[in-house]
Image (cartoon, rainbow, N blue to C red):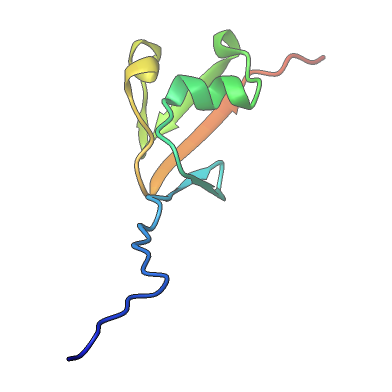
Length: 83
């Protein structure tokens, strides 16, 4: 009679990390976040910026409903006053 012992059997699921680029810098996230959440996280003034999403100027009306995907490229240009 043989016995089968399974010790410390664990199924590990790799988290779904997403890499994206913001102003040329690489970032990694593990949860789904929207463009608007990203802009707010970095404390940008939404009325003084233009956002480019994957090489296209991106309408502010879509920011809240657009989730960041793997390898997205986001460029944020802010308006700065001066004299």
